Amino acid sequence: MYSYEQLHTFAKKIFIAIGHTEELAASAADVLISADIRGVDSHGIARLKGYVRLWEVDRINAKPNIQIVHETPSTATIDADAALGLVAGPRAMQVAIDKAKQVGTGWVSVKNSNHYGIAGFHSMMALEEDMIGISLTNASPLVAPTFGKERMLGTNPISVAIPTLNETPFIADMATTTAANGKLEVLQRKKEDAPLGWIQDGDGTPTSNAHGVKEGGALLPLGGDREHASHKGYILGSIVDIFSAVLSGANYGPWVPPFVSFIDPVADPVGEGLGHFFGAMRVDAFRPKEEFLQHMDQWVARFRQTTPIDPNVPVQIPGDYERGMEAERLKNGIPVLDAVIADLNELGEKFGVKL
Image (tube, rainbow, N blue to C red; front, side):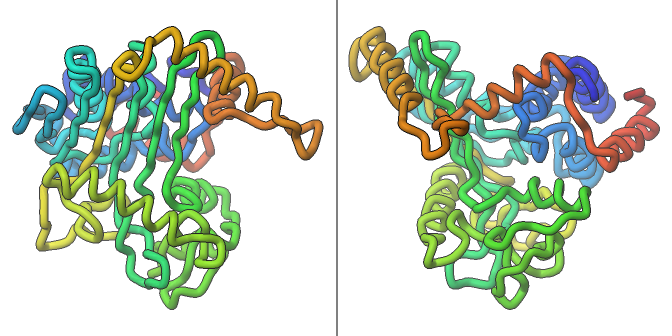
């Protein structure tokens, strides 16, 4: 078990070692380790080696000039200058929040960025201002559209955070695939099979081989197959791709530069880097804030009272699982797989940082 502080300090020192200022390194570590503390192990410290690998092949700019390249009172497009998405994401979300403070809502698209960690970190920033936060990003092309064999989309997550008065906030954070690729990586490290419905092999046949995507297969859209409405997951992933990239000028579909090492970037990009999309909405732009927050409390409380199928398994509110994991891990520490510890020790030796 490791404490939040141990993992955060290590990640921050590695980001400094590859050229980031202390401020940028701290921001990146905040996003990265928030995944571990919330139980999203696939997007936390286990990804640190991948970010360093991208820096080593000149795909990460440690000293980016992140700037707004197009703007209206309520919208902006940001060029992240090949920054870590862990750095560009919070910067862009803050722009959306600042615009919402001025005119009611703020909408920001980002191009020329990289993997930005868990989507929920960025949407949750709006909660501090009693705003609704929205966070979308496209990602490595690992997903086949319904009826297709080719890897055309990313896991393309959607996160929405909605404030409350006294109840816990509503925090949705989900991939538009049946499972995120990071969960496959966890299964690979554990040498376990994947559930059927997560992936298909190169011929389009469902498989439980956790290495199936590496071996030419693809992740499946949310739903898994047509009979279980995978077309809806495909549609959701497509919307995220268009909002994040076609709107911003980033790469989209199969042109998205991959985070994973087993896919090479395409030679003929259609945009710059990968893309994100952020939104912030002041609730008093729609109705009095206190009134909205009180009704959100009522919404949350009533859903918690739903009669459960199993009396021992209550109905949850989106965000409950992560809140429970955060409380447990802040108290007892964060478990890290042996394979991940080996990767971190390797990074530590390379850059003179002790875990």
